[in-house]
Length: 472
Ligand code: FCB
Image 1 (cartoon, rainbow, N blue to C red):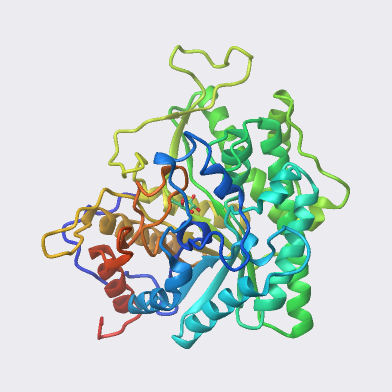
Image 2 (image 1 turned 90 degrees about the horizontal axis):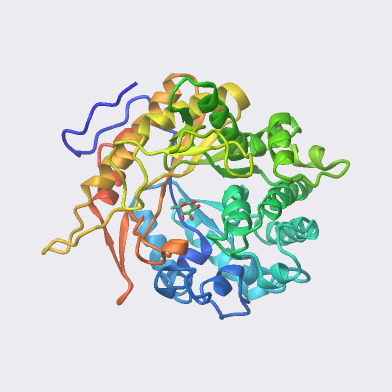
């Protein structure tokens, strides 16, 4: 399927999306809050990692970020002005449980209570992510995610957070993108805590999934005991893996990429098993998933919704540039192949039709209700003389991906919502403030927020799709 290229960026109702489709914007704690040392918050692995020379663009950090901790009521006004019905944000574990264990920090909880209350007062549904990568540093010092105890610490924190906020918040996501936490953080060293040990990365995968399952059980039990409505899930970063050719080597590369990117998470979550081929591949490189008796039943605790973060699909080859199918250690080659496609400022290929493919595949293989919990793009925005931000490239990206969601629904995928990443420009991890994903511009000198053209387009498109005549 090919989507029609953009002629004009005028808002239009997206046909095929129902009036009750969930529309949102998303952020995460470390990327926007700032106030890194206030009200009892302790350092997370990101505070530490940002101080490592060479780890983050220009040694930037989240000490101030968008200063959201101090500007929260205005930011809720801003969200409200977009006409979205849902705001996805994350809780900072080191704000709520500063030592990663033990009692909650009341001031930390109070901030999120106020945030949830402000949102609800404006008719916006709060959607909480418990873990968007800011592990308390003390837990990293005790071994971090490669250590089994961290899963239990996470479950304890989840229960504390739910006890305090479960009366106000119905939508709970345990983890954001465990692939990034495990592989970028522990295997490839590109994200906090910056370790580079493949086996530790795989251990982290299992303990993240175990932590998810334990947290899911405790939250579910607490919600039932209180009679609270609950929609519980996990968010994964997922893509599509397409073979460069039909050769056996390329098909095997796709199988491996899909195995470590998608199936190693979704098979245990949905079916309670790790895929045998993935375990065999891991065995070949001396990595082991540290499963103990009963773990898989915990991990497969039923969820209500799967959060999907989608940025791009990729093409894979099982042959390297010299024509070899294994590397010097005899490990099979799994290589991404660059395509001649338009790209974002992250240098990521723009592949909206692959979002349709992904959602249809998820429906077929895993049959869970899904919500797009993140989708969006960084571009090098310019501010026009009149102060506006004419980001037609971002608007086109959003428009084509929302159309791709509608196309997936037309093919039977049960997709219930779409959240733009991100509400506003923010600290983009190792890229610091260099990459801007917001639909709202942030001037980091003044903390002024300005709706980019994409935000206005999004607002008007939501209104039209809901069938409202006044696009506001
Ligand atoms: C995702 C992260 C999010 C943001 C986007 C661009 O992997 O969940 O925090 O950095 O990428």
